[in-house]
Image (cartoon, rainbow, N blue to C red; front, side, top):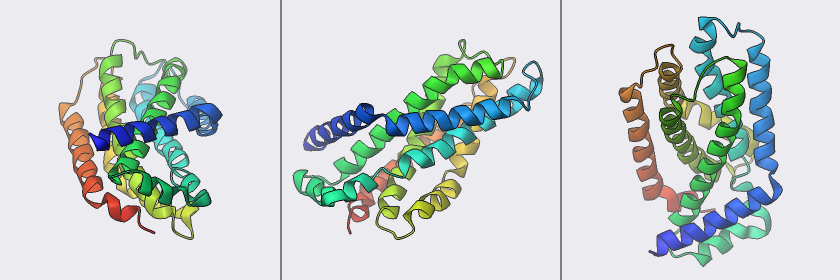
Length: 224
């Protein structure tokens, strides 16, 4: 119970801090919007190309936006040695990582849900009829990105070239998530939508495996 209570308190702090300033959300939304709008001019919205390549462009934009959002995840805790104070205030250090990844997942989902209507309009892709299934894919994909990104953010925050280290480590690690999410999303955006359960299962296994690894080794990630 202490893990859940500590995580809940820290998650509340993360959400209040971000929604009060909205710096990360606004920056990420503007970035994704620019990518979607720019690439929309290269496709004919009435052709099959829009459906075939739209899912890949959407997840590529989400991936690069996530790298921007995850970068300051632990950097703000470096000020006044806040991370050490957090470690002393909780009984289980994993609650810090759990609150961080939960907050990152919420921020990514909010950004994706805001951009989904814009994507549907510009690329002439109906998403209402598959919204529930698409939401499941967005959640599993965002959770995988957040788990790996939170762990790497904790590592890179204490490195010298932290601005370059996170994208270099994050992009290769998340390639399987990007491929699986793109394939499942492309199936849902098809003329005759279908859900690739194999891809959904892969995303779920990826999330469980990496979350378990984060739980086992999370304490070492927070050491200076």
